[in-house]
Image 1 (cartoon, one colour):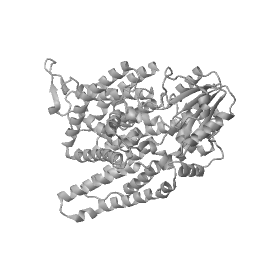
Image 2 (cartoon, helix red, strand yellow):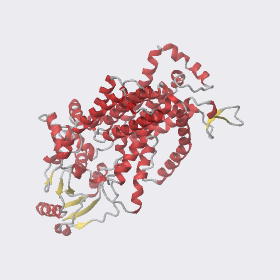
Image 3 (cartoon, helix red, strand yellow):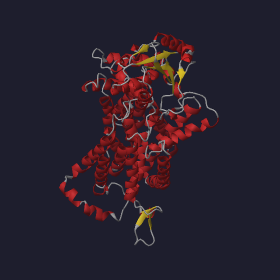
Image 4 (cartoon, helix red, strand yellow):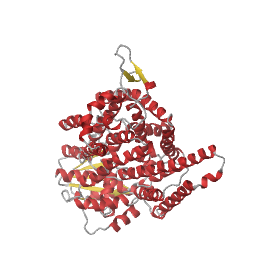
Length: 622
């Protein structure tokens, strides 16, 4: 692993240094030191046809991105949401798992077995009746996972995670197009793409068997159409029919991938209202709002609304949507009111930089925190100044306002849902996909200014023979860009090594603990409300199967709706039927303890380690 990253670091450093030879003339900002670099890379330009340079660069950024997304792809165990993807994409259902009785691991894992008899209709039906997501990604995964052989009789985790990883890599050239179209600059496009390639947030989403990378792809497409529409509004020219149709199609696919894509659409509506207000400020003619570009945009809005409304009946008929979103609902007391602010800020920061601040060791956390803090103290003023420089260019000002409007409105919507509707969207970092591409493009636009800083921004350092730098820290423009990219790269490495965006569930560690502690057969019991709790136990059963250990293990999913005592009764009845001796592990068991349990000897768990995602009590039943 260390050899891989050392080689990758050197290779990527050489790749990113190709930019001076190919992008120096795409931003009207001068750099007096760029002449020697152009000469240095003259051989590259003469050997390659000009039309090949930019496609090759984009291909290189994709190689950077896909390599990061594929490293350690299956090293981290799947968690509950990924189990939902696996089960529903196979056309299976969680309802086949027996409740309120002791079952073997193979019975619990049966929904993870490929089902040749299942069809796309089964995928759509099971999602509509048991889940809270639209079916597009799951249908794609249904076809995709047929390409991979089973792993010990279970669906291939590598295959399931490979699909979002590939889609995540495809978003790199797509975001290049967004950056280039928005600012009419290949340099902005390249810097946007290369930052997308190493974004720790992008890598995090791409390494999970979920639909977020596909949703990001649609967000990029929809924002590109918004940018094109903005230019036509500025020029008062009709929006091409093909753009309008493409926009409606992308929006329809986005809604069919994730319902929260509608939050992106809401931000676009607010931005369009802002553009209409600007036009009315510049002209008193209200009829401008019925001019050709606006009439096509109204058509897009109507088409998108129709595409969204068709999902309303499915949402209303789903009885499980409330239970599945319980975790983002709840009341707040005291300092809890400030948690969403810090959660939103943390996600924003982690889109660019994330070192191992989640480690359990202070010797790792403190240096990582200091480095991140130092980095942002240095980088934030530079990036903000880059945005200000872009705002000074009339052609770029509107694009900055549009993309910043998307980001600000999305964050505002998150806080409205959190503080006024009681739905804390900030708790799920993955939901920020709705504005993530806009952040990356703004970052690329700012770094483009750093790459070719204007003369008034450069400062000559005394005693250094006239060497110029950005700010006060003696770092010139291209080195500043390289430093930001390196921070992103090492942050991506942090994620793929499970030192950042750590998995909340660690069934692998829990199974190791059981192996070390229990010498008799075990019963692992949990309370059950939804398939989320089934997924928690599936993680444990899968680790047992892969390790080929704990041959005499059993599971109990003690179901409860509103009465916790239902789980207590199920546990009581199960314990009476089991031969002794055995060890009882109560895992995430939220119900009164059964009377039969009191006849067992409770083991002191103070000396045992805590396991992420699994709160447990151990009883020895003799």
